[in-house]
Every structure is written in C-alpha cells, then in structure tokens.
Length: 151
Picture 1 (cartoon, one colour):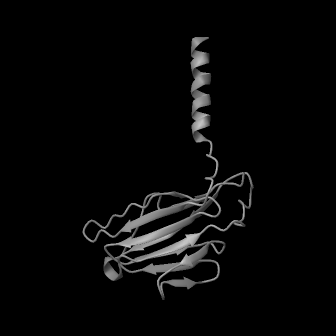
Picture 2 (picture 1 turned 90 degrees about the vertical axis):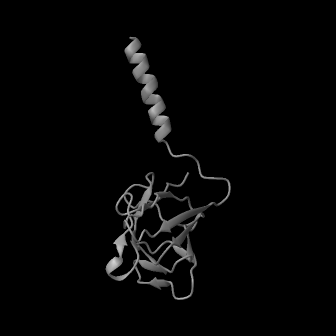
Picture 3 (picture 1 turned 135 degrees about the horizontal axis):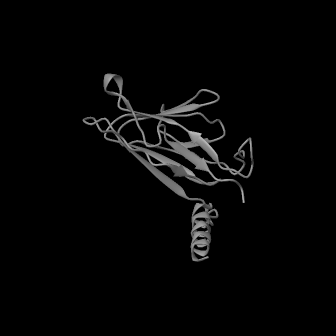
C-alpha cells in the first residue's frame, strides 16, 4: 500500500512537471546567442519555447552564422540589410559577426496541423562559419523552436 501511495505521488509530480506553463502576461524576447567555435567546431544551440507574440533574437558571435528556418508563418521583424532571404516555404538569415536578427511568432500562428492541443515544433538549421571551415550548430541536431498550443 505504501508503495502504491508513493508511486501515485511520484506520477502526479512528474505529470505536473511536464505540463506546459501558461503564456507570459506580456510578449517576451528570447535571446539565442550562436557562438562560432573556429577551433573545436562545436556550437550548442538551446531549444527555444516561444509563445504567440514572442520574439526570438538570433545573435552571431565570433563569426558568420547562417540560419535556415522552414516555416513561412514566422515573421522576420528585424535583420541587417541583405541578411534576410525569403524562399517561399522557408527563409534564411545570414548574420555576420556581432549581427542579430529578430523573428516574431505572430498571434495568428497556426496550431499543430495534426492536433491543435499539441505544440508546434519547428526544426531549423544553423551553419556556423563559412566555406571549408563551416560546420552545423547542434543541440537536438538540428535545433528547434517550440510553439505551445493556444490556451
């Protein structure tokens, strides 16, 4: 009986910990710093959770960074001149050292097309450096942005 009670409490705590927190009261800006490592060629990129109306600022540190995002519903709010290229279903941001670009998750960002109660995951590609010295940024290989379902 004691085991069953302990098990139930553990499952409850685990379930509560996995639940998505409510959206913030006001839009947030999430910073994603991408540091080019010219020696070890490893760059960890954090997973991003962005609610509708939030913005994500990508910042290139110590070298050129190219970000390719396969989602036409995100909005590029700010990018250096010539850094943004729109390819229809996807777009690319090419940021020189110390440059940044901001994308926004619009309020009307579509729900998960298979189940509106589930999050949207946008897997994107980051290429650090250029030419023969280029390498992919990693973490979840490729990195991702998560947009929680509407509440």
